Amino acid sequence: MTLRGCFFGIIKYTIFFVSLMVVGALSTFLTLRFFTSGDEVVVPDLTGKQPVEAIQILNQQGLQLKILPQKRYSDSVAKDRILLQDPRASVKIKSGRSITVYLSLGPEKVIVPDLTGQSSRVATMMLEQHGLQVGKLIYVSSAAMEGDQVMAQYPLPGTEVSGVRTVNLLVNNLQTGPVYVMPDVIGRTYSIVNDYFKDAGLRVGLSQGVDYPGIASGTIVKQSPPAGYKVSKDTFISLYYSK
Image (cartoon, rainbow, N blue to C red; front, side, top):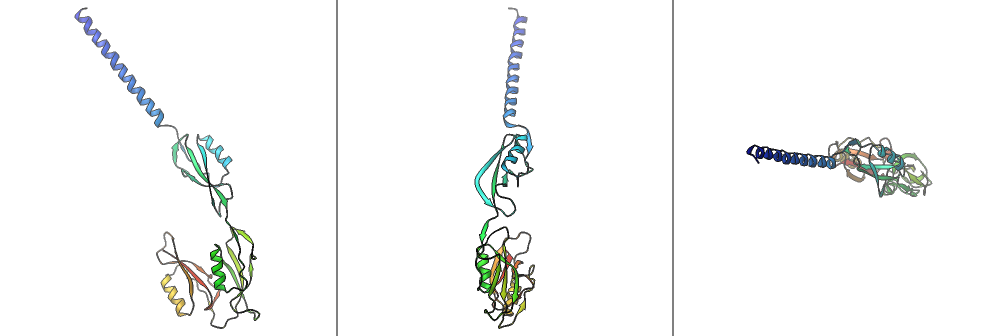
């Protein structure tokens, strides 16, 4: 073989091996790209939808539905509809993934306790223990019962309620001491209001701090009884303030 033939042979084999390396690198790149990438889709909002409807929506976008066995109570989402989802709506994810959801149990049902004959203080405590609160307070004066006792209520004792969390009370206002009108203290400083009630001879039976983002610590966010209702030294007053 001549020198020229050897030279061209070396060049030919060099080109061949370089071509193999390029093809191999390109193949590896395309393979990795295939397995690490895919069509991105925007997660739809499934809240409030039935599972069958959610499956249809997800199938159109190449996604799957995974329903967790744990269910949670909700006052806003009906029973057996989707309450929570992960990932959340509007997030971009790869097609083929599963959306995990919790279903709703609907509003939690509560049995209304019998408050007849109880003082307004005890009645308020009993309602709060059942996750309820005082709704409308109507006062009448009657010598048939002691002052500040519940004469009637609505809903009636033993009623199963869900969603509605208030109980209206008819209270005997036959008083043996001074009677005041409950002021609106929401938005005021708890320590100042508490001192004011003490000076007036009123007692705050329940003081509780709650998480309330955006509200300054120590600011009252909820009160019971509401503003405008009659209160006396026997009235159970509840104040909730931001932590």
